[in-house]
Image (cartoon, rainbow, N blue to C red; front, side, top):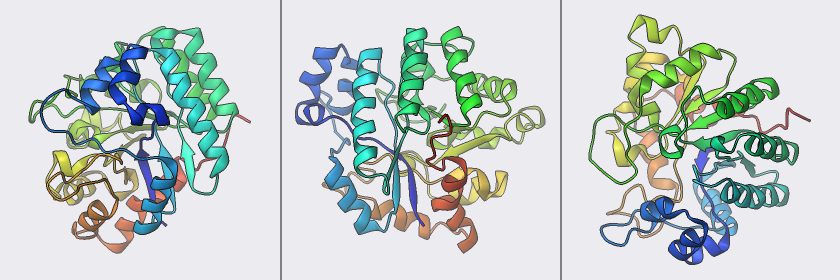
Length: 298
């Protein structure tokens, strides 16, 4: 079984004219990332039917739709509504996480509850740095405590601390993620994009002892890291805490892809010096255990 734990989709009018849609909602930061006015574009676009066809072509059984770290709570609710509809239409193929703007306080908490009651099974992808909230923000803490109570995972975007400058790369404090994991050891915490290389900081005895509940996804890996990262991370933390995620519909191989697909990245993983048992866990078994797709609040 293959489960892609990190996929994004947007409402149809957003994909039709991303910049106009974003500007109408005050989400210019998103537009600058996905539809820059100049420079290369790696963002691809998809709809539900295309996603399902691409999943079938690559042998992917399920995908987890992640939200975006929007600036405005109203945009979060618009995306959640689309996800609720798509999950109900394709319950055997799609799971989805809710998105919120934690700075919206009670409104964000109420939206999280509404989305989980409607069938969504997690929270994220959120970004503290992009959305402007600290780990100790009361609204954020309330959301985390609901996630722990309901047994649903939380996915956070983490930027790599060293690398090529690009519009989406902001400076995160990896210490903040360690603090969160330490304070809430029962939180199912997924750190996207290999956690900004946080797995290697688990060599630090103090940090490593506090990160045992943390799982890392592989989203956008070909854009950021050498394929050797798979073997290196598994050697450091084992295969049980890594989730395959593609960041579809990004074009992960811009020189080889005219449109997004899953197959090239899966081919890279199959040649990443992993054992068959390790690949099985990373490609699906871990997601089935950690995410599960069940509405635990109900």
